[in-house]
Image (cartoon, rainbow, N blue to C red; front, side, top):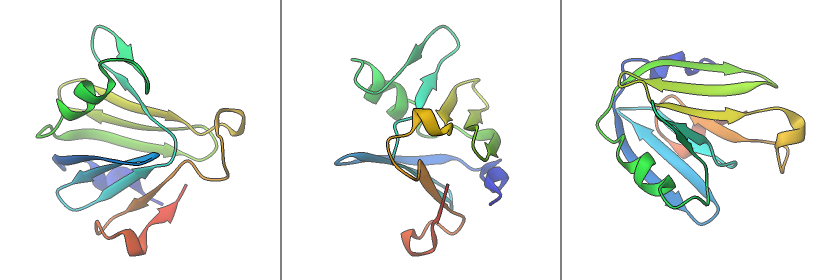
Length: 114
């Protein structure tokens, strides 16, 4: 799966759905079954920390500079403002068989799990 299609796309929505997260871009959709970290220029925040929601939502309107999926290692989405969404894909860091899913079209029906 090629998540580099996110590059140049604007983050248009952050959706919290019970126990997972969806990031919608101009077209593509990334669903996280595991909670990604938000790496800001001065500090990072993780799920459960007080500013996590605000840090994610503050990125709405920002454009993706790079996006990379390394199977069994990590998913990183770097925005042009230097903020990075990062998720470990190492087996020991996951609570289930899949960490998330990606849809190039934005439709949950054609998501590919990673």
